Picture (cartoon, rainbow, N blue to C red):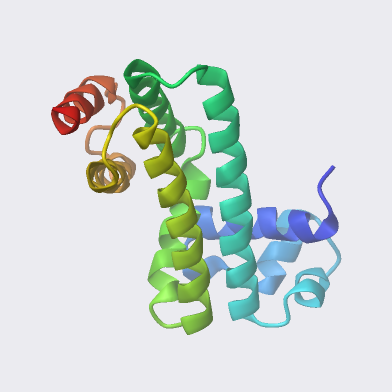
Length: 182
């Protein structure tokens, strides 16, 4: 069961992902969370604090998804890595589209808010390090795994804008992964 703070943050993710950064207000979050007016501001006094909270909550939820995905795939093999990357890319741009759009909105907002920038970068680096560790478990060098992660970042943006939408990403990911392993 989610705490009220988590309810506020999850609602903020929905507002941010569905409406963009201009839609994110304390009032909109209260309405989305179906909480009394002022609830969001009780937890996050400023918009910047709310955005930093969203960044942390996104990281928690992303890490939980990666953990679930990693357990579901079984032992580390190149095929499992490719399957996992394809599953992640598809999930991030379909089922989890709103959350992904919220994350992208945070990247834009973080350029003007040092505390948010730090939080977003910290979360991104943790997830990146974890992805690199997973790739290393099948023999991919860290620098090459970084290339794979960068490709995924770009592929997410392309799929969200309609390019490659609906296509199975596995073939391209397999080709790239195998090329990096050679």
